[in-house]
Length: 215
Figure 1: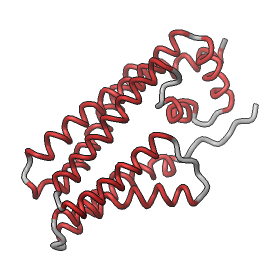
Figure 2: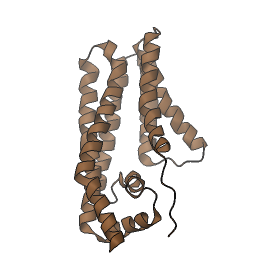
Figure 3: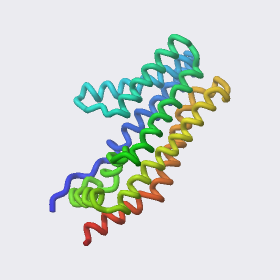
Figure 4: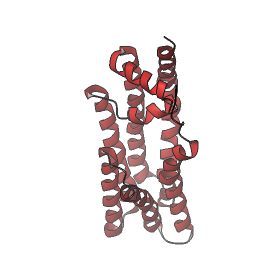
C-alpha cells in the first residue's frame, strides 16, 4: 500500500529554531552590542512576526492561535517601543502563554484537542495506513480520544506554568537577565511538556494505532 513520505526532521525543527533559538540569539547579540535591553527584546520579538508574515505571503493559512500570537507580539513590540519598559515586553508573553493554555484546555472539553493537528504527523510519520487508523480511532475509540485529550491537556498545563514563570520573572530577575528569560522559560516548557506528554499519551496512542492496523 502506498504511503506518503514521512516529514523530514529538519522541516519539523525549523519553526522551533526560528521562533525560539533565533529570537534568543538576536536578543543576546543586540544586548552585547550595547543596544540596550528594550532594543534587544524588540529584536527578538520581531523574528517570529517576520516568519509568520512570510508564511502568510507564501500562501499558508493563519489559524486562530497563530493570529493571537501575531497580534500579541505586535502589541508587545509597539508597547516596548512607546513605553520603553523592558519588563512589559517580557510580561506580555505571559498573556500569550495564558491564552493559549486556556484555549488548549477548553478544546479538550469542547471538541478536537488543539494539539492533535501537530500530533498526527508525529505519530503516523506520514504513513497513509497509520493516518487512516488514527482517524478511525479518533471517531470510535473512547480510550484513544482520552489519550488524545490528555496530550493537549499536558501542554496546556505546562503553558499555564510557563505563564506564571514569565509573569513573575519579568519583575523579579535583574533587568540584565531579561533578554535570556523568555528563551530559557520556553525551552524548559517544551522539554517538560514533551517528556510528560510522551510518557502519558504518545506511547499509548502509538500502540493503539499499531494495534488498529494489525487487527
